[in-house]
Length: 396
Figure 1 (cartoon, rainbow, N blue to C red):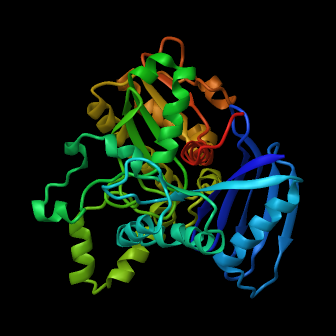
Figure 2: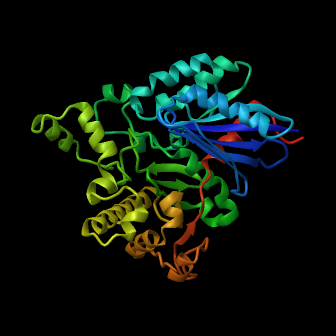
């Protein structure tokens, strides 16, 4: 028999999941996968811990499974997949925890009300994150649920790092720098002592580079500065998000081009970034494979901005002992890592091109003053750890 902790990451049209065996000292992965196309053409896939496909299912074009149907199907599948599996808790990735939440929380009705109130701060993510929580609360009220926040890890930052130069009345309304990808940075911080004890106790910049990208400066494993601010559109250019933008551009779009708030939201979240600059794709793999000058420009702008932010974060940390690359682009795009490291030679980074191209964990030379690492992130495992700790199940 196995006590199972389910981790859910809900988007607008998808539900990603992982199931863990909560027995023993280490959480063991049982299944992973997703249900995509929830409102158009739902498809389900499940793989085991080794990546072997366990099952797939397609509901057909025009089927609206929705979040409710997806949650119900997934719960039934997990219980039928393994004999004696008992679902003991569910952990959820919730993008925004606001000012109040600096750690994961057991789900209650008052908590849900507070998280609902934060939806205007993350309108593209928060409402979808909360849907499965409400569905499970209605259908399985006895089942413990835990909300894990992408902003929580950054609440340790100094107040000065969270502040905008706005009137105090605006700050009191919650307009401040929150930072995101906190679960990813928390996971990296948790494994760094076993990889580079000196850097873990010192100053590290982590580059979480993917379709959504950000960077974070850690001192002794705690966040001191991050590139994302009030929203997850700030900071680095991303797949379709513009990153940092002069607020005057927004005013110009309104006053001179007559764009509405919805138009601008669509522009800065869905039409910009790598896709907007290249006019080709938001996928870094496609851009690196292209000879189109616009694709090259998008890649150059991406690496240039990483280099600028790296200098800024090193200043916030008052030095640099290690640079860590993680997430999809960070873990798999050797050319991006090489270019970033070459631009950062002034910081004492000396990249080992052979190690970088061969999939090594450490990609800096022995003489490099700054160690450079490639470490796969695992936000879901971080959520599972928090969930087990809060619901009080585990090693026997």
